[in-house]
Image: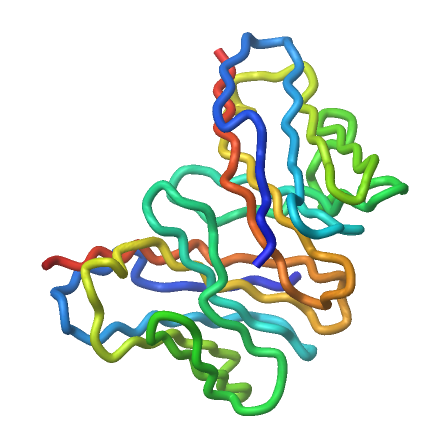
Length: 114
Length: 116
């Protein structure tokens, strides 16, 4: 069964600091990869996605993620965070040949201190 | 992106009763919708795939007779928690996979169920 691992569940950092959230998955086949964000009191929103092509993917709000196939990783980064980036971030994986079912990681609670 | 609504947003019910949660795709048709359950401080767990006009596909360990799913139209899927128990208390979230798109999922705001 596929699984998705996210480490450091709670992350606290100051504005302008850089953020990197790790995501590793266990699935042998080709996968589609996603990062979702859930702002306080809001529903899940797509930050970025990777299907194929350039392994460095740019998403909304200055976020980017890099797919490293050899490491089964899809880490999320932002060079300089803002207070408004306070949210929970979820990595999700879907098998390429599947029916779009998503397996989620446990999430990273990120708090940005002004 | 697609707008997805859920109703109700919160519901409290007594143990043994049944509760129906609606998921609507407001601006896209969706042959496929998904139902997730989110426990406190845990990730979303996929419960089932709701297929318009056919039976839902349940994930391993999810009781299909307890969590009834009906996807009667291209814009509406319902999840009914039958004979609810306190351990069914959770946050239930649906997502929509708009017809004609491959991998996009758009999520509803969720329904908080509390069983007393």
